[in-house]
Amino acid sequence: MQIHVQRRTRRPPPLAMNSLPQELIDAVIDNLPRSSLFSSSLVLKRWRRRSQRRVLERIKFISEDQVDRWYTDFPQDPKGIASYVRFVGFQNTIFPGNLATFGCALQNLCSLTTLWVNGMEIPDELPAQIPRMEVWKRIIILRLWSISSTLTTVVSVVLSLPNLEVLSISRATAGLGWPLSSHPVIPPHRAPLDLLELRGDDGGIGRALTRSGLMSRHLSLDVDHPDMDQLIMPSSETLVKLTLYGM
Image 1 (tube, rainbow, N blue to C red):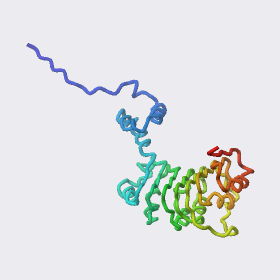
Image 2 (spheres, rainbow, N blue to C red):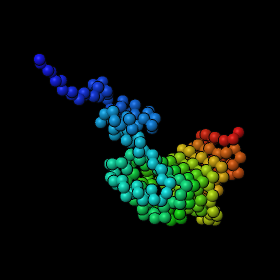
Image 3 (cartoon, rainbow, N blue to C red):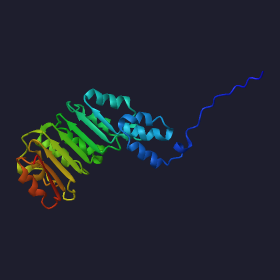
Image 4 (cartoon, one colour):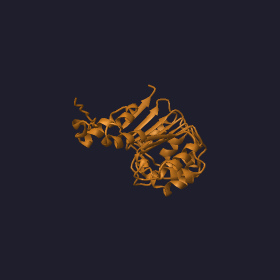
């Protein structure tokens, strides 16, 4: 009697799947729902990096402790995980009291483009820190929702972002600002925003921004915004689209 033992060999990955151009693989992964990204990262090695990038492109902090853990637990390698992050959100918490730690947590986010702040207090010390941090130059979208701060602080933060293109402010609570004569003036080379969106009560921030010289190509307002005329007129030279909500 002859016994033949067939050794089971590991099957190579499907040839068709492995031969796809990387650009096509990236396009497929970019259109997958987030719930499928873990599975796609296991298909092939060539699928892993793009899948991981999609998973980590958005992070959200809901406590100061999470900010500390991000800085402590994740390698601060500009070419590592930190380089995947494009969106950072801070929600329903006090802005990190230690601005140095906050700066360290953001400094290696070399792909960061969007910052979202919701339900938080912005400290008066922040505007002075912005010019010292390279990461702020990369931010093109800033969303400030349900924040509390002084007009001086919020307007100074916005005007300190040299490449800002989209600004969204909603339900802000701002304290009294400075006299009109002392408003900071935006540099003459600063391009208008692509979009200024003001929803709900913005605490007078929109009016303070336009008085400082900030203009926008696209303005989105609630139809009953109390400062509509004062917001539209300064941007009349650059405005190409006006969107009114609630009509």
